[in-house]
Amino acid sequence: MAEFDLVVRGGQVVTAADRMMCDIGIRAGRITALAEGLGQGAREIDARGRLVLPGGIDSHVHLDQYQGEDVTMADGFETGSRSAAAGGNTTLIPFALQQRGQSLRQTVEAYHAKATGQSYVDYGFHLIITDPTPHVLGQELPALIADGYTSVKIFMTYDDLVLRDREILEVLSVTRSHGALVMIHAEGYDQIKFLTDKLEQAGHTAPYFHAASRPQVVEREATHRALAHAELTEAAVMIVHVSGAEAMEQIDWARRRGIRVFAETCPQYLVLTADHLKGLNMDETGGKYVCSPPPRDEAAQAALWRGIAAGVFDVISSDHSPFRYNDTQGKLHPKGRTSFRWVPNGIPGVAARLPILFSEGVGKGRISLERFVALTASNHAKLYGMYPKKGTIAVGSDADLTLWDPERRVTLTQDLMFHGCDYTPYEGLEVTGWPVTTILRGKVVFDAGQPLGRKGGGTFLSRGASVSA
Ligand code: URP
Ligand code: ZN
Ligand code: ZN
Image 1 (tube, rainbow, N blue to C red):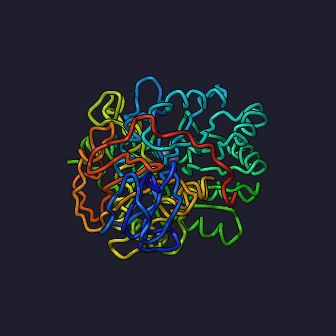
Image 2: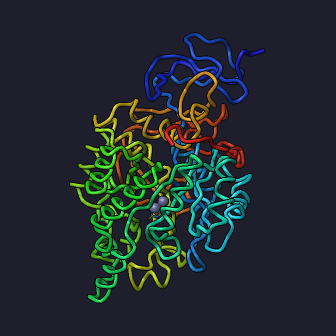
Image 3: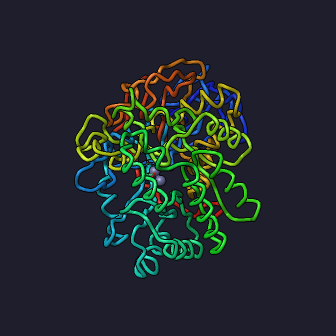
């Protein structure tokens, strides 16, 4: 009988700390040996010439999230997780969104019903809290944290999601006591409304003006306020989707004061600019790029790369938030055509995240391979309570692996994304480096451009405390 179920042989194994040439022996879904010249596996994969990386972990994706009656998200768990696997990912953490008036426990049960039996990769849930009643904060949230839902997202904008400052403080004080991490969408509600009204009054309704309605000061002000709230409550917070220098400076300032802050940025802020929102001659194709915060300019991109190199950022996620473009339930729904105010916010990107970051980061000498692994897998596992089960290549860890061809040159196109969207905002972008095989707990789920795994092979992950929460 073979010693292993699977041996991945002869690749260069890379973790956040090291790189080494060795074989990986896998039994019952876990790594049981790392050495040169391992014995036979029932199945063998030749990884010579490949990098073998921990499977990507994307801790910021939106799947099957309720958007109101007239807008529908383009990906549920099946297509979203298939797209994730195509892009070299083995773990996702989407959101369970509480609608106002809804119990948090019911919210979580509803998202389990959406996900069970559908996912190609493993997944957990962050809790989006929109209605922090005394019952939610006093009973439900502590119980859910104890059950392994150890992270929360709150919003400082959007009519249906925004929390007042007092509510933010109450949430932070509960997560501080119970050891959960709070992701904060830091853009100020009133500044956005003020600017949106002024732009519309001036007739500036095209998608491009979405960017003008949310300049960096909007993000900077809210980031500062969020960090002041974190200081007051001593809670750990993650400022998500940081888009430029101004929010980054606030994070740097907060760290110097000893505030417990982590930071995330996303590929769209590294390779897109607000000019993409102009579409052709300011037309509605700009809606394909409407996301919040909006992409900025080349100076902001350069600042983010400096921040990545300097260690300001802990994680890089996709913020995959997919809406079809040519669809009345998507970017072109009737109200969306009257003003940027109504265009659904968000872009797809779960399949493109790793190739873009590898190519622009490792390929262009901006980050090391080890840092790439930290930013795209290991730090997500640590901060969201999954390490070392997930996020590394070590004896005892889940055998979640991505075999990577560092030389392959690829032009990103819609047909490589395997998502439910009808476009990719990265169409035509040239990358070098590509995930050729994705392995989840010892089973190949995506190989040579095709999904192979069983839909439903991905399972729910109950998570522990953040290592630093
Ligand atoms: O525009 C975006 N980012 N939409 C997704 C929701 C969020 O704020 O992350
Ligand atoms: Zn957000
Ligand atoms: Zn998001």
